[in-house]
Length: 193
Image (cartoon, rainbow, N blue to C red; front, side, top):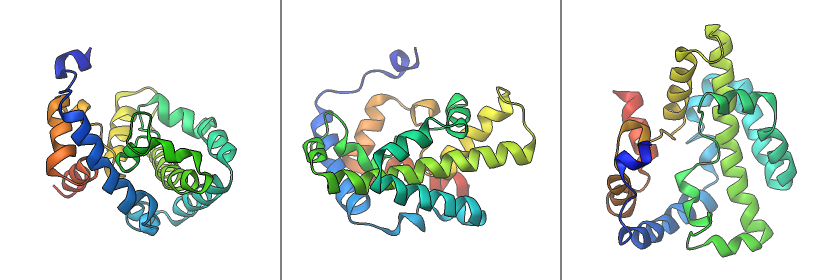
């Protein structure tokens, strides 16, 4: 229903949006190995969970099944049930079906690095959500649990822009022309403000 209100976006913007996804992937997704400290900065306040996310990332690079197993675990299910974003990094859009570089997924090494990036981000969000839920002693399914999920998504650079009421066309235009990483940029400003 939300998609109907916000609209489907503009077909003419889609190719430009996909073209702008390529530099995001190349600069941040494939060539930048600093994600443990850049995107992972919010996790450093909890070194144990940061370490677990790093180990999960490295393990996922070697074994895709390890990543799948982690996403099928209780912690991931609990986080997903409350709306925590899973495997939605804007840095990997070019590799998704329909993306300009989706065909390079056939090369194993070129699958491993993005999987390591996404698994670190996923593990970070999942572990942070569960740690905050346990620390706050919040009941599963409560409104507060969903607020914690939104906070964690924003903290880790993946706020749901549709949930903010942004039209599909505005999201497309921002990805195509205005910002290198609109979700990550908005999350930074959201956390600072």
